[in-house]
Image (cartoon, rainbow, N blue to C red; front, side):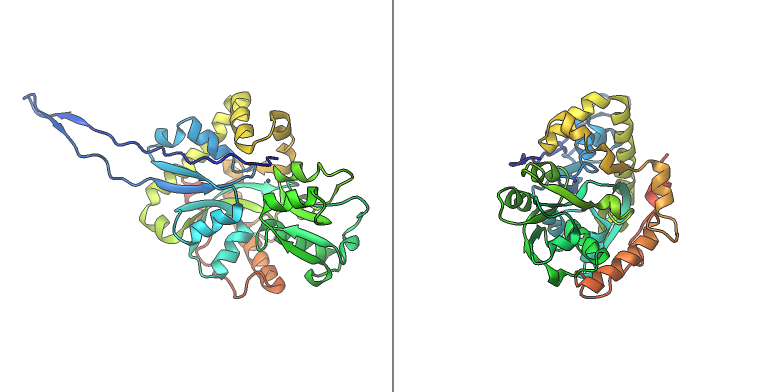
Length: 336
């Protein structure tokens, strides 16, 4: 990665501090001007690998790390990507594939952290009677155009010997796509958790294939604007440190943090726990390993090249994306 009407929430964590100082041996009080340090604007949306950011916020872990953050929730995943590209966010939670698509379109971005790999929580779900990918030929299939599950759909079609022209593609925001599928307006849908839960409520529906069938193809990250990273490396480091402190907090209090994440997802706690197998949250060592060169999709440098070539092949990237400097392992490498 269900809610039918996701919660809308924007919280501001940065308060203005008035500091009273007593100087020298004489008692003299002075009030410093309110802090003008701008908070880091981080976007996130509905996906199990990003819900831990809500724990970071609720537990005050950004403040504990000494970095002011405004965590901004987006009901629509694509809206968060567009906000980052437009400079309305400093960082956003998004996939490697979608990041490369943005870079191909002219965005200047850097990946500073791997949250997770999707191992089944991205799915193409079909109506009763559709038992194979070949059965999608001539059918209406909905997904959020140009984003992660459109990419997954195209991967699945190619593996089955089909192309985008073999289906009738219906571009819809992920939540709307799930709703359209349940209402019987389309024959299949590409969605991520928690919207998979909603889509599978259609009687007789089944998962045709998922990200489990394409290991390493969908990795999820904290992605920041390159100029912001270059000007604020200390802030980025503190945010990356906060992520791993958050994972420690989840491990220390699994029930309490589950409650926070399930509430943000708009699903029950048992439903949220069911997502565990479909999302593999990366440890610090897995993060460091992922940024290293390799010859499989487990290596981000290798995966970036493969995804770039595929996006150009299927038309989701019109120009070759600039990959140099895209991956920035220095922050995970510097985590204590």
